[in-house]
Image (tube, rainbow, N blue to C red; front, top):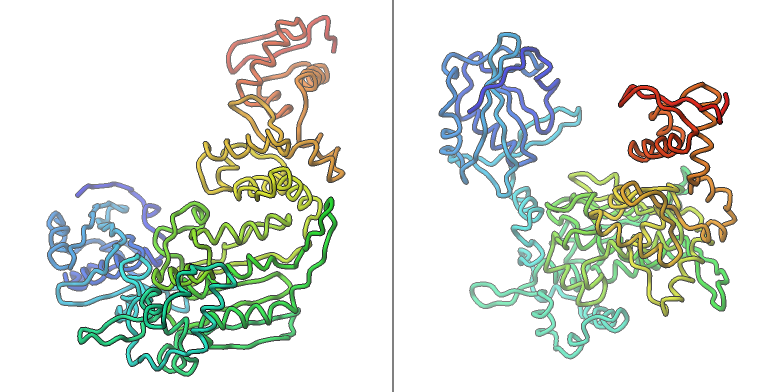
Length: 563
């Protein structure tokens, strides 16, 4: 236990949130109530419990029985299962003693030793509350942390009669059409079910359907009765007019076919001539559409009610599914993290059938489907703890950018550009000029990988470096701007030569009588070292005279450089 002294209320959070809890201790908070509140935080996102603070955020102090809290971590560990480790800090807020108890987010379900499971949630008014953690909540949380696979579990009440022979045939056709594992085509029904995890055996040895089996080859009537959380919708909105709005509960392979069939009329494409080839340019790349929709159906949380929504409107295409990102996957590592499916058995089956990317890098396919046509990156920014939301812009394609990509791929004997190269080119096209750190953030990786990627583009004549190695930045190359008719834009982005820098500095000194290093940094967009070297060079050339030292130094024109 440590002691902190803040002296004023600013050390105290302003209000309760999902991760902040206030507990009054004026009447001595019972130990069981305190432990339950800590369990509630641990089963959500972790956080801080402030003991001795009222619900409105007013510190009223600790009860005399809690003046010494050295034994509190041991008490909490003894009253929780598995034992919860907390950190207790005692603070003085304007003369009032309170305790800040830091609770880590638990990767397993934590209960009190009395068997109470609680979780924290936000009410409609935005204030937090603790609620019982029901069995489906516990299963959902276990799936999020990769501790359980709901898709490999049997479905209560389901029998082999709930499998649809027509869906089996659809599965075999999908293997042929999408290049799935052709070994599956040689198996009989029972062996196929076992290979794909569609059945499992009870303790009595009876074969029964798993969630994966019911989702892929189950009868629609069985899905409606036995799996009420499975539902999807396709919606088309034009301004405030709904032109298509249908909800279905089809098995997954039929669902994907139905969604694509209904989407095609709203996805016109045109062709452009690039060299000897005519390249189709759709409103939405079908590969990105298929992967985005398949991901939503495969990785959704089947313990939660709610439909997978595929919605096309004036803003673009939106695909959303219940259940947030699984533990370990964030918006900042989507492109680089190892695959972590919420439903591993279902994901593996769909990969073997050929529906989703076998490598588990389906997000790459979505990015490629957008960036290749010069459109914005896929947008996951609306994703939260309860939903994954993918937005694909349907703006017009940049045909010149597409031509550059296709021509480069043709020079590589038809080999596609690496996804990192596409992201870097798109980022430079959008933001004009970026350094290595900024490029690394775009590709969700480190600076070493970003540097290798952009230098390969430099070698290919698609990017141009500017500045020294330490302060180097990059733009698209002059040839790329020339192809886009943007020679002036390139000149503006490429910056100025060293001669231009000298002229700018001397011109400033003539007009204002002096120039400082900070002026040079602002005028020429140079680093501190580069500005110092430029001033030193002008001084040695006899064009500027130095006055003062270090930070106080300034430079004036010499007699050869009159005002």
